[in-house]
Each structure stands twice: as structure tokens, then as C-alpha cells.
Image 1 (spheres, rainbow, N blue to C red):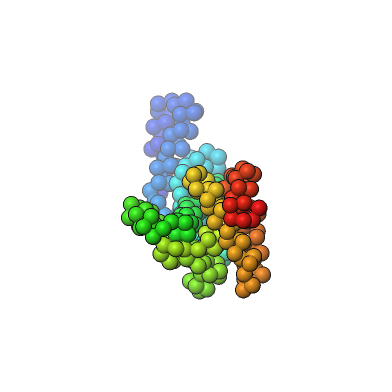
Image 2: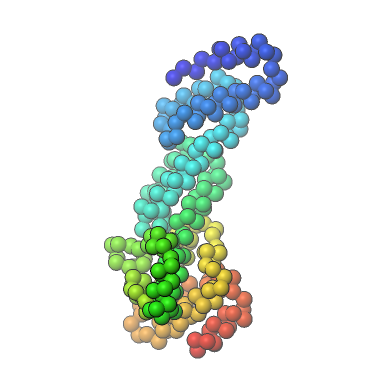
Length: 275
């Protein structure tokens, strides 16, 4: 496509525009050309836009706001897709390399892609936390209570099980008893799901507080179920060392994640006999 701007420049000269208005007009011309395609730009299109920028005598900083507005949603979408294609939602090395190449092609700054990646992670994390809350409901509600609540909640609100590793048949390879059962689920399912939530956050190296997605009124009770599960694991001789260590690490972090006060933590432990 031609970058002949002689007509535009002739018009600007004829009306004797102030310099700042000239730049605004050039930025608008660049932005309009940029917005002609919503796809990830090919190398050829990137070169075309670079030539246009040069012909308009615009700096990288002049055109970056337009590039950010156009390209950051594309990066965010690709990050979300990478999480969906990777085990447990944790972006693997292959997809990390792909995202790095995409950042370079889109000419996006590190701080901006980090923000977009975190936004994608928050979107991907919500169904994981929803699964944890569902496991909590199954472990604490009677069949009648659970049936009533589930009847009032649209199935679409329950979220996709994004923490499921189909190859291993469980949550990150850990059997999540009760996770797919009806009423009468187990406390371990709550702890297992929460461990998966923290795995997701750690594996993607994002600063997200999953506890913000847990309703305040049930935070203490969710923790109580995790304490109960931890107690059951301690009394079980069939639990592997790896699972025990994973759950212990999760238990150490849960009070901070759920923003529980020391008195609430002590009370929860006392109520399940683990003061």
C-alpha cells in the first residue's frame, strides 16, 4: 500500500498549521493505518508501518500509544491461549518463547506485557478458585442444601476445570477425592484445589492474591476444611511424601492468602482439634 503523503503535507502547508497540530494530524494518519487490520501484523505489514512512521517523521514514543492500544489486547489474548494449552494453566517454556517473540513483533514494552499477562492470568484463575469453592460446598453442605444452591446457580457460573491434567487423571497428578462427586465431597478436595491455585500463581510468576476471589464470609470455613484435610493426611499412612510436602507448603501460605487474622487461624485449628 502506498505511503504517499504529499496531499496531506501540501494541505498542512497551505493552512499553515502550528507544529503541535501537525504532529497530531500525522499521529492520526498513522493510527488510522494501524487500525486497518486487527490481526497480528506480518513482517511485511510491520515494515510498511515503519516506513509510514519514518515518512511522517514520528518517533517511537509518538506512535507507541497507538501501538499499545492496538496490540496489547492481541498479546493478552495470546497469553490466555497459552495458559489454556499448557498443563494446569502454567505456561510452559515453548509458549513462553512464543510470547517473547510476539512481544518483539508487536514492539511492546516489558511493563505493558507483564500487566497484560497478569490480567490474562486473573481471568484464567477465577474458574480455578470457583472449583475450590465448589469443592468446599460439596464438603460442607447437606445434599438438600447443595441441591438448592446448585439449582439457583447457572451451570455456566461454575467455571471450567482448568486445573485438570487429563494425562494424569487428576489435579496436577493428585487425586482430588470429591472434586467430581456430588454432595458429600471431601476436605482434601478443597486443599487439593487450593494447592492447584497456588501452583498456577507460582508457575506463571504472577502477583495475584487468589484470596480476593474467595467471598469474605466463607474464608475462615474454607481454611477450616483445609486444616481438616491436613489433619487427615497426617493420620494417613498411604499419603506420599510429595503430596504431604505440597499440602504442608499450601497450609503455610493459606492464612496470608485468605487474609485471616491470627485469632481466626487459631479458632479454625481448635475447631478441628488441631490447636
